[in-house]
Length: 83
Image (cartoon, rainbow, N blue to C red; front, side):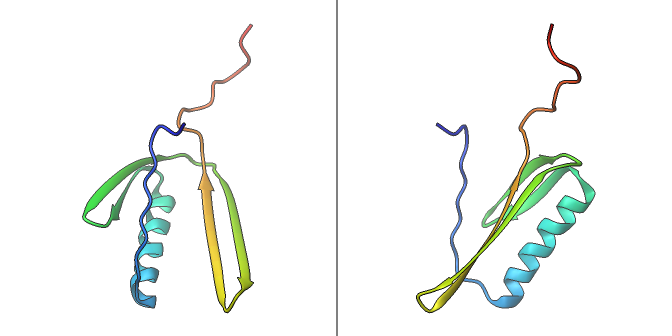
């Protein structure tokens, strides 16, 4: 079971989608705690210097679907192995 899940689906203009992606890019660029405006509220996320990414594009049934996935651990990694 997930600790938290937020999902938002909406119809945006191309410009609105670009603005949303630009805000995310700016938050990633600065790192630390990123403030992202999602709908009526704001979500604050700690963004580390390194993260995993996955980009998936599917074409079929008359549409294109693009998913951009960013992953990072919720806690900082421990230095060294436990004895």
